[in-house]
Length: 135
Image (cartoon, rainbow, N blue to C red; front, side):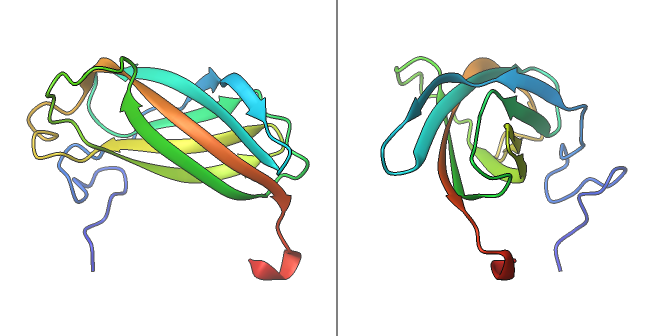
């Protein structure tokens, strides 16, 4: 069984402590004809711990979109040879938001838990209604 990541626990990584939730407006929303909606946010996090973000500005046809895919990358399209690696988990969705949690997971995360560069999170959502019995 994995170590607990609850408040007061060091979790799997020593720096896995929760912080307050941020709210960010999604930029460059793009809706395709096949139900995919794409957008992105940029964040910087100099403190340690997980970063929870409520990404707003969406207008889904359902509060439970079928699929949400997130990708973390550097905001600048240039290889700086930084060792940072990130995990993103979708926590909750609503008709007008997607809530995500970002955690730094590379081997330096405990020594230098925040990150100095701006991180871009690309978000792709398939806006189809999930069946009620599929939960």
